[in-house]
Image (cartoon, rainbow, N blue to C red):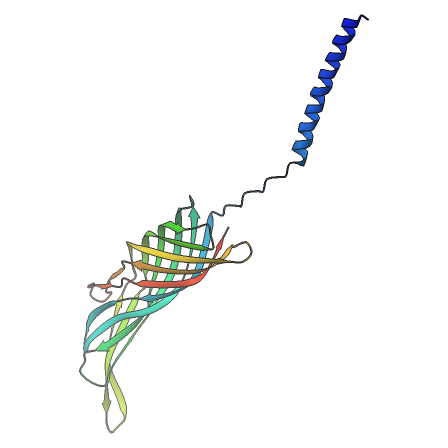
Amino acid sequence: MTRSTRRISTTFLMTVLMVAAAAMADDIAETVEPAKPEAPKVRKWNLRFGVLLADTEGDAAVSADPGSVNLNLNAGGGGGVNLERQVSPLVGVEFGISTIGSNIGLSTGAGTKHAFTSTDILIMTPLTLGVNFHVANGGPVDVYAGPLLAYNRYSELSVRTGVDFPWWPWGDDDSATTAVRWTDSSELTWGARAGLGVFFGKKRKWSAEFSLTYLDATYEAERESDSARTSISLDPLMFGFGFGFRF
């Protein structure tokens, strides 16, 4: 082997060794490079449930012999549950169902101290579909608000009025009573909701939930006795509190 050939072989061998060393150095650098932390899991579902306190305002006059009855709906309560699917960090679509019973106050116009009244509890069951816009989300607090559609189902309502006639001296009581019953009804209406969630726990899956919901609700039903229709505007303003779970 000539000197020039030996020089070429030596140069080629040195080049191969340098390339191999550089490749090994890259492999070692990739091996010892620290792993990147995984991105936190995005939770897209929110389940909320709790108690509702409702402030309803509605009244109606019922004409019934032997007197008329003034019917007033005031504060009531119930419970509800809803499930939200967040399509983005700022927007979520929510499905919910709740049941609310309204306390009913009655007064009679029979004009005697022996008049009496009694009634059932009016129960409203709204099935809601809403859109929530999350003003603050991703931290320890979730603030949201948005419009909603509601399909309201109302129960039957019965009002009974009468007058007792004490016949002294025998002590036997006679009475005249009248019952007025409205059939159950339903309606499609609208509303709005605002809510606040305060997350707790190590992974912040659970939250304390507070909400304020308004529904434009009107109980409009037909009386079974004479087919007369009565409309009672309820428009409940509901304050809710409970718990939430996101997953």
